[in-house]
Length: 364
Image 1 (tube, rainbow, N blue to C red):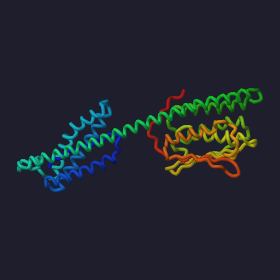
Image 2: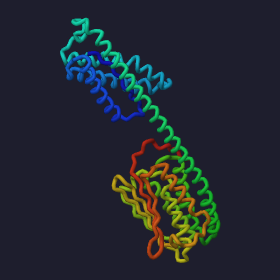
Image 3: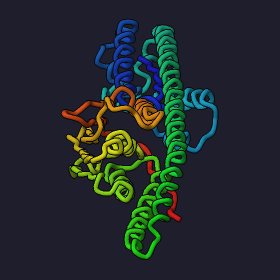
């Protein structure tokens, strides 16, 4: 019995898929060789799986050492694998199988010369089958690589849109804050002006840091929202109140920047500002380890109040688009009217581990 096998194990095909394909293919090949050659099935199973595993391990070793620093086209890498890994893996696997089964290295072929032609036919079938399964796995790897590049491009576009949105929002907020600061620059209100300046410094430092990284956590977002609300309190006075209820589990959860703040801005603009008496904003965050729930509640004007700001739904539309790009169908944004008045905006997100390092630039 002679066996030839190759598996393509690129980084874009999962280990589980490789293992399943290896087990299924090697078992089927062992059965086929037993039917064609009359060799006991257990012998073919030993040779098939040991040779297949040896080829796969050698291919993985070559991929991790050579492919990582090689800029060859994918087809050239595939051809290289075919002409190097197959013979070396076959030799290593067959030698180990010979040792386990006690069969001679030539498998007894030269004791029966008439069987050589038959074994060569079997070898040809095995090689064709090996090439087909290798080509199939290679094509799947190419498709997976293309999908990965498309997802990375989408993430890059989403991040660029986020930074553009921040660039559009923050100057408007900054100009309003500076106008309030200028109005406070009188001897009687210097203490309040100093306090406002401190809050503005905290906010700008946090906002600048947020624009320089791709990932953050809930605690980072809250650290940005608190000075934002403190600045707005200078304008609204006692009309604006808020409460924070952030669990320890939720505070450590990953959260893309600027997902929560638009909900707070929406609550201020459409809930608190239209009410003469103002109102209270409650920010809650909790997590069970799999799902992160963020909610912003206000007891202000409510969903059915006339909109005083044209285009007020654009922020939520952009937020929904970001959720779709970042999480797909696994994330949701719900808006509910509260009784007797007010609104609750709730974000439900999957808790996903960070897959890339924070691209944080040094602070100025």
